[in-house]
Image 1: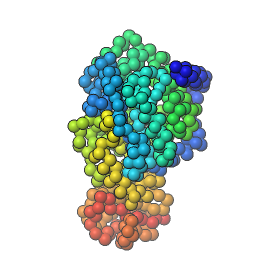
Image 2: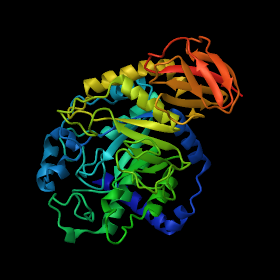
Image 3: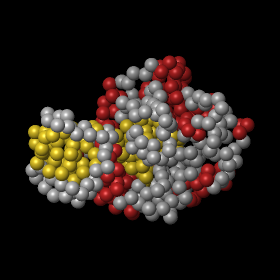
Image 4: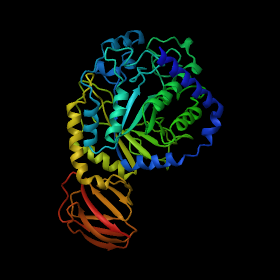
Length: 441
């Protein structure tokens, strides 16, 4: 009881400070030096792992099961009394993810179902108070990430299918809530109090990854999420913490990264991106699933091959973006074995080729059918992913001083043309990623 009271007192004080600065502070947002350094660190990592884990994992039907099946909250919430992920081991998770070559983890702290995966004082509907497990998995993961030097990001849902005070949008309409009980000021205070907890009690947070803005994108009157004040709260509590929002639109003031769902920046094959959402100059991130679902689904064994995953990582880096590759942990707390195998396979590749991905920017040549390019200073890495000839034309304006295969250093012949250069490879490329390193000027 004392812990809950003190936490609420702290949150109230912080929220009062937030209202004093108001929206104006974030509308004129200037990133701090710590934030700019964090942006660069984030971009340099190029590869992270997304973890969708919550009460929905118990049903093994994906993270949207409550909505898709139209289950009333009063019934759905009963599953919490049986949630006991006995095999959860934060050390094993971080070790497996670190072995893949990924540099950060983004985990769902509260998804649309409304269940909190940490010991929040704002609701009893959380993994400590509502389950027999009684352990704060976010705290354990945060502590382990700090021990192993892994950057940790928190996913946080803007919408909630369970809370009565959340104004129902175009989802959650079958979950048994009374629309007349909506109370946006109450819900907004709840969210900011929870964010205050996450940014106060769980160590350094690399980013807050918002989702759910699109729940009100069809409202006749545009819905005011009051993002300015919320973003200002985050930046005030942890100036280095980045803010991203999976809203599929152009970045808003106060956002530090631009997110693309199931698409490379500048593409819209999944149909999520607003036509006006041009690629910004902010750090970029593409999130994609390792199989077909975000949350654990027992029948979804359609895992991408390690070759497909490597190609997606390379093409993402070739766009100057990070890849956030998703895994849905099982209800018992383990990462699926196939996912662990893929992490290991990607790690073996990253041990050899990681320096052509980490710390690079988009290369001189846009992503092509044959592959992509990445650049670090005077070194241009040509990633040949799908090509069956020895000669490859590159429309380069820079001068190529030297060309060799990476990492073994075989000489690659370079012929200058009026519009670029032609590389003559030692053999027809057959590797998952045949890399040629060019020293340029």
